[in-house]
Amino acid sequence: MALSKPTPEPTPPQGGGAERRQFDRARAEWPITIVLDDGPHEARVRDVSRGGVCFFLDRPLGEMTLLKMEFDLPVVSGVRRITGQGAVVRCERISEALDHYEIAVFLTEMAQPDRKTIETYVTSWRSRTVQ
Image (cartoon, rainbow, N blue to C red; front, side):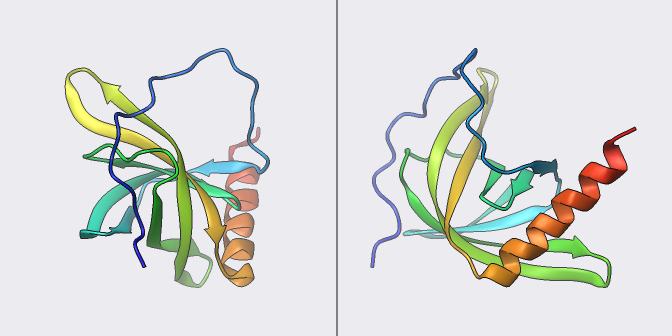
């Protein structure tokens, strides 16, 4: 089964629109492995929520590209391996000077315990950042 479609040009940045996020998110900075038709690719997480992940990658991905992902999420007892599948909902070039992209993925398939672990992480992160 193919996981991705051909890569069209990335979506240009869009500003001023209404917030569409359904779930709270937390900033993050750890590696993530993205699996596409041509194999695994290493990326860097920007933020995470129960419903999606945003990461930086050195190539554009077209909207609705399907992919698999896995990353180690910090938890109280150490780390937990999180796995899932999702669809690209946004791809924006970071800047004209860099050939890197910010990619947002809506999580379409993920075990409920993994979603709950992400939700716990986000809640904990938010409580540490609120003053």
